[in-house]
Length: 275
Image: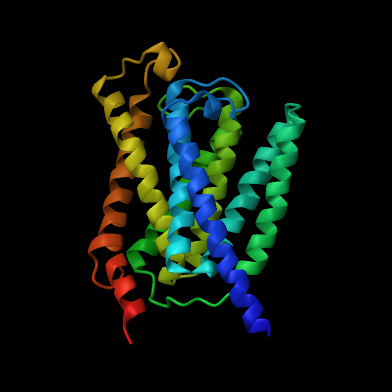
C-alpha cells in the first residue's frame, strides 16, 4: 500500500514539475522581453539588463523542473528543495529588513515548501545510477565556490556584475547565487548522474540566454547606455570573467548532455526503452 501511495505521489510531483517548468518559462519570457506584468513582479525598478539576467535564472529553473519531469528522477528534487530553502531564507530576511512584508512572507513560505520538498525527495529511490563524471563533479565544486564568493559579495552589496545593480537587488541576487551554490554542492555530494543532469542542463539554459547580451556588451568596448546598463561603463574585467565561465560551462554541458556516449540524454531514453 505504501509503495502504491509513493508511486501516486511521485506521479503528482512530476505533474507539478511540468507546471513549474511552464510557469518559470513564461516568467523568463516576460522578463527577457520586458513585459509590464513581469517587470512589475520585481519589488523595485531595475535597468533592462537586470531583467535579462533574471530571465536567465527563470529559464534555468524551468529547464531543471522540465528535466526532472522528463526523466522521472524525483529524488533529484532534494537539491532543488535545498536551493529553495537557502535562496528563500536570504531573500525573505532582506525583504523583511526593507519593510516589504508581503513578499517576505511569501519567501518564508518558500522556505517551508523547500524543507518539505527536500525531506520527501531525499527518501525517494534513484533510478539512474550511472556515475557522475569526475570532470562534472569537479566543475560542480568549482561552481559552488564561485557562487559562494559572488553571492557573499552581493549579499554585502559589493558590485560584482558587469553593470550596476540596485543595491537591494544585489542582496536578492546574492541569495539566488547562494541557493545555487547549495544546489551544486548537494549534487557534488551525491555523485550519480541522476543528480547531475538537472543542474547541468539548467546551467546550459542560463548560459545560452546570457551569451548574446554579454557579447553585445563586450562588442561595445565598455561603452554603456543608461537605458540598458544603468548609466555607468561596463566593468570589462567582470564581463570577461563571466564570459569565461559561460563558455566553459556551456562546453561542459553540451559534451556530457549531448555527446558523451555514457551520459548523453538520447542514450538515457534508449536505456529506458531497452528490455
